[in-house]
Image (cartoon, rainbow over all chains, first blue to last red; front, side, top):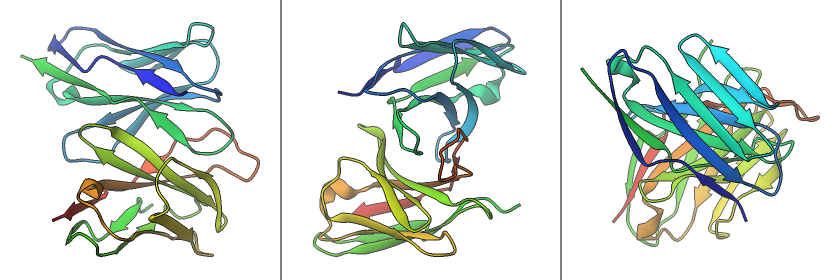
Amino acid sequence: GQNIDQPTEMTATEGAIVQINCTYQTSGFNGLFWYQQHAGEAPTFLSYNVLDGLEEKGRFSSFLSRSKGYSYLLLKELQMKDSASYLCAVRGDNTDKLIFGTGTRLQVFP
Amino acid sequence: KAGVTQTPRYLIKTRGQQVTLSCSPISGHRSVSWYQQTPGQGLQFLFEYFSETQRNKGNFPGRFSGRQFSNSRSEMNVSTLELGDSALYLCASSRTSRQGGLYEQYFGPGTRLTVT
C-alpha cells in the first residue's frame, strides 16, 4: 500500500528552528515534494528531493534518505507568516501523480 | 505569467445532481492533475491528463471523470453527487513532458463544492 506519515500539529516560537518529519512507504519512488498551504489558500511549492541529502533554499531546507523512507523539512528563523500547513508528497512514477500526507499544521508564536 | 485558474470558485449543489469544474493551466503546461481535499483525508489524487490523454487515475468511483482539451484546459465532472463529495477540488499544472521529468506542480485556487 501507500502510506505517508507526518505529525498532525507542531508549535514553535518566532526566530526559532523547526523540523517537520515525513516517513513514507510507497510502491515506487520518483521524488519527494514539500508544499506549504495557508488556510483557505492553494498549496505552494517549497522544494523537492530526488537523491539522498540536503537541499537548501534560503530559510527552508529539505532532507531525504531513500533507504529509510524518510524526509524532513527544516525551517530556520521562523516568522509569523510561516504559520501554515506543510504537506509532504511522494511521486511514485514518471507521471504527475502525487501521494500526499495529511499535512502538519505549524503554529508560530511570538 | 498568469497562474492556474479554476472556475467556479464556489458551488452549491444538491444530492443527485451533477457538476462540471473547469481548470486552465499555466501557459505552456501540458500536464493537468486534479485533487480532492477534505479535512479528514487531506489531498487525494483524482486523475492526471497529458495531451488530452488520461495518464493516471486515483481510487475514486466512476462518478468522477475528466477530460483535457487540445489547448490543455481541463474539466472534471462528478455525477450523482453525494454528501461526501463536499470538498475543495484543486487543479494543478506542470511542465512535465511525455518522457516525464521532475517538475513542481502549480496549484489553482480551487473550487469549493458543497453538496446539500
